[in-house]
Structures are given as C-alpha cells and as structure tokens.
Length: 302
Image (tube, one colour):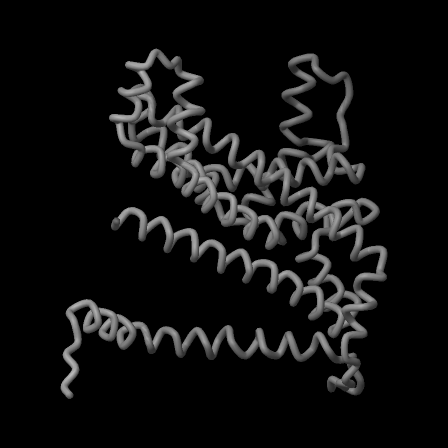
C-alpha cells in the first residue's frame, strides 16, 4: 500500500533536514557540558597534582547542599529576587505597553528610547550602575543631595538589604524594555470590537482594562512571566560586578554561588550540584514556555 505524504509533512521533513546541522552543533557544544555537569554533581572532585581526582559519592553533594547555610541563604535571596523582579517587571512593562499603545506614544522615538537599556551589554549595564551607586562620586548621591533629600552621602551597597534591592532595581531597569515590547505586541492583538462593546455597555477605562484587556492578554502575560523568571534565576553579571555576593553574603544568588563554589572554593562537585538545580528549574520553565507558545499559536490558527 502506497503512502502519500501531505504538503505539511513534506514541509516538516524539509524543516528538520535544514535545522539538523545546527542541532548537531548545539548538541556537541551544549550537550556534553550538561551531561558532564550532571555526572560531576554525583562525585567528589579534588584537584591534585594538576589533575582532577573524582570519587563517586551518590547524592552526598545534594544532601550537603541543603544542609549548608550559605546555600539556604542564596536560595532565599534568589526566591525574593525572582519574585520581586517578575512582579515589578510585569507591572512596569504593562504600564509602558499601555502608554505606547496610546496615540501620543505610538511614535518610533519612544520605542527606540525604550529599547536602549535592553541593548546595553549586561556587564556594561552593571558597570554603569556601579558608577551610579558609588558612595564617593556616584550620581545618585549627587542628585539626592542637590534636591535636599539626603544630607550626606550613602553607601547604597553597604548593607545586605539595600544592596540586594539595588541589584534588583538595576536588573529590572534592564529587563523592562523587552517585556514591555512583548506585552505591547500582545496588546495590539486585542480585538478593537471588544473595546467598542465595552464602551457601548458604559464601562470606564479601568473597567475596560480589567474586563477586556487583562483577560485578552493572559497568554502574553504568562509567556512574559515564564521568560522573566528564567532570566531572573540566571542573573550573574550584575552580582559579579557590583557586590561579589557581599556584604555578608546578602546578595549571593544561586547562579553566583555555583560559580563561587566551583572556581573560588574549588568544590567542583558541590558547584555542579548547585548548577544542576538551576538547570532543572530553568529547563522546566522552558518547557512551560514552549507549551504556552504552542498553545497560543494553536489558538491563533483556530
């Protein structure tokens, strides 16, 4: 019996063949390090005479990890940082998206201006904020003193709570532009007929936003939340440049802790275990993201 492929099947096969070389390269570049990291997470690794001595220890690294006070502190810092960043970025981005949707905000100038923070390289962004927050010549102290808000210079990164919140501020500033444009794209897909129907029913702007805009934006907001959560879990550059985890480990996040444990303390097995935990969390979120995108596209097609 002869089987005839449909046009869509031919397209799918051709697409797979075209991307196969790229997938092989990615598997070679990313696949091996990921597998090696998982293996290292179950080993005790010691540097001796210029070579690595590896001893299988089962789940000992993971048990020790959850018994370590620094790890638990980094976990709490990361949970706070991630939650607050997602909430702030989504709220600010939605407000900006609504303003850009307004006739006065539809000019290209505002969108170009918005994208500038996101276009700055992560390390350059961190160096910029290090200059802004410097206690001696930082512009933040200069502006606040000039406005009479403070009467002396402050060491903004001098206490754990203040330092963590300023790291959060710096990363929110960089993250907002992309999420705002993502939500703006979702906002532009809301059918205008729904707004007209709400207007005919006598709804005001707040009621229209809550009853029309937000329900229509659920898919875009869900995608933005997942993406921002992944990016928040992977924050490293800004911690490395601004605080190196200090003061008193107040700004140690999981990604930085994995780096410090591996390269500063040479506890390679433990560092790999922490990195594996981050990988599993981000991979699970990536799967959720793919499912959300697939569902949204399927709904659009239907």
